Image (tube, rainbow over the protein chains, first blue to last red):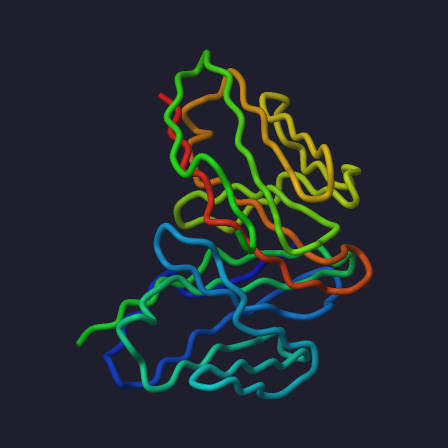
Length: 109
Length: 115
């Protein structure tokens, strides 16, 4: 079967760095997405990785290792507004998105 | 308006009611999606439309009935729902499907409560 695993909840301190991991087992791979979802709001696109390595976009970076079926989202200089759920999704061989359950990130002052 | 909009934002209905959810995208996309989001569970893909044609129906109960009159509008008709259908229903759109991994853009969702 297809499976995406990510931690249910994480807590971090304002100004710090946090890494949210995602492991996957899917039938085929056509890229991995990270989305951010604030409570009661729409998921919004953060990043897309299809090749191994690190993609940096401001305070957010996303890493992919296809051989390990592993990705992480790195958030630097955390701000209170980063409190949200972070969703990992993999595009499978049919380009269908397989979603993880999301990681709720709590930022404390 | 821009992006993807959904109405209503909140809906409470009894099990014998009939209601409809509406989604509209202003992005010029060709594909639209309905997802169900329940607490602490992955997004569940319900239906996919490409150029107004349904291309995916993931074993969704017949009490959910989608309609796509044109590439900008998508409806989800609801009837005789069960309490376990209470969830956040999200609409999304993307440029294309099955030609590459396209970024999906989501609406804010409809919070549905079935009594």
